[in-house]
Image 1: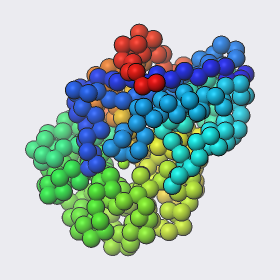
Image 2 (image 1 turned 45 degrees about the vertical axis):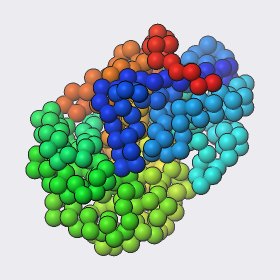
Image 3 (image 1 turned 180 degrees about the vertical axis):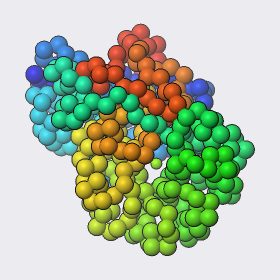
Image 4 (image 1 turned 90 degrees about the vertical axis):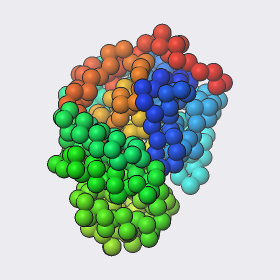
Length: 375
Ligand SMILES: [Mg+2]
């Protein structure tokens, strides 16, 4: 089977609540959320779907740049290529859009890689994990995301998470650093027995991070994620020597090469695996396997993808046997989604179907309804 066509859909999906990280707002109810869907058609007529969720406050890719990169640069070199040759496909994409500090345009490439996996699994009539010689698992546990600069709201959200069966919370800090300690205390008070993941999204310098880590030791936080700028592996290694709180790296690790540098510098205890950040399922799987072999802990995350990206990520996290509830939180923020047989989150658990491919059916009507012109 060869790749016969690649179509790209720029979408603005409706949000039911705003979402901010320390870098600023990444989506709001007035403007909606940018998502890109990719439809890949094989020479036998099979169709595969992939998704990317650019957040320009989190990394440099945008709705426009992801769409035009796929349409004008990746599609022309991939159409006509054998769909089963993943190494060749990635070589072609990486030659066409060269690396900068790390892999160039990973979020755009991730949507193509995801569509390719869906296409190949559907071609063989098997669920996605079977492509990796892995077992299909029927559900995954989610953490509950809390992003606010108000301690009372943090308390209420943590209480909601605990009462609704979630086993972990993922708390964003650095939105207003003056409130960080009060927010962490409020969450701990409301949900003392939940796994407590705290994500700073690069908000601090080393002195601030050391001070905050000491407070986290007192409060009882389970992991401190990406406290320093992405390129500060040495700083993260120094922070590890000054606190007993495990340090996780997210924005520092985009590729297997980044991960190996972090391991060599002893810069982290845990790694955040994300399909779109890592340029697709192929590299995210490699990173998960390397981190596991290196004895690092694995955290699963996403960039608030809709049901398609969430389901693909969930299959990978099940394959990698990630035990800590994962941060796939699109459903918390999105009011609608192009996937028609949507997943239902109940008691912090997402059920997966055993359908072939990723297991999602896409509505053409919704692609049209939420379509945004970028080309
Ligand atoms: Mg993170």
